[in-house]
Image (cartoon, protein in one colour):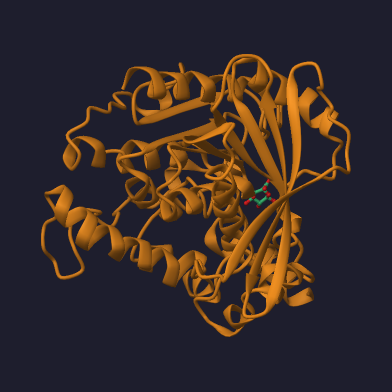
Length: 386
Ligand code: GTR
């Protein structure tokens, strides 16, 4: 531990824009063999699988998709906090593999008003320690606002998949279902496990008649936003992926080395990423990919990034550049118009347009109602007018 702390002391975060290295980013549109990628066919058959594999090998680790059975059962443990406007379902998702089982809990609110199936906002939630009513008031999970706008909403506590803790993170699916991952250099770790959890929630939506799984929006904040991006890149069933202030190892470009760096995050949270990621501590320029390429993996589905002005640890400028550059795939490969005309410094109003959007708000690192209301605007624009 003291060694780690010494290392941390030696690597202060950079907040000086003039010290950011000149950006030379890997090209999403040149294959490993050096061939240009110009068509949807080449993108989907050659380059997209290559990039996905590079993220898996070097950053997040494998996402095991195999299991033997999955089943969903409704339990009744908590009261419906909003009985006037919503149906509340507590769903146990039971997954079996090789004779072992794991259970994760999904909390689902479905509007009473109107007629289903409803589109659904799914939050990867790492703040279940706080009472739900308080989470609602702070805007972190604004159930009432979402329900009133006609959305179903669901979330799971990341701890029910893999505890968010350096000592006990193995006490979830890494122990019950996928123990072999632990001995692999490119094995799944915490963030990958949470992404896996989001995929199982999607399995449930596909089986829930009141929910329209073809209109599902995955949302995560910060560490949850990193997991959301990884899930959105892997699982093409999500119509929209939203990553709020996810910073290093999430939305922002690693090569900028601004605020939290690969070295800092691997020291602070050694159980979030694969072992292989640690080889890039201080060597971000050696990565065969950068985070803008997660945006291209999500295309042609929709993706939204958001930042907060004072959240410099997460590098708002890097988050903006990442979606601005990554979203070039929509015009270049898919023939869909997407525009990020402004430089980061000029960026004030939310960019609400089909396929890729962004906002930066005033204030600190958090997920707030102001953020959600732009997410809803973006989703409405994408579901309504595409
Ligand atoms: C920080 C961490 C960030 C971010 C954040 C959060 O301590 O350095 O990468 O994940 O926590 O999740 O709020």
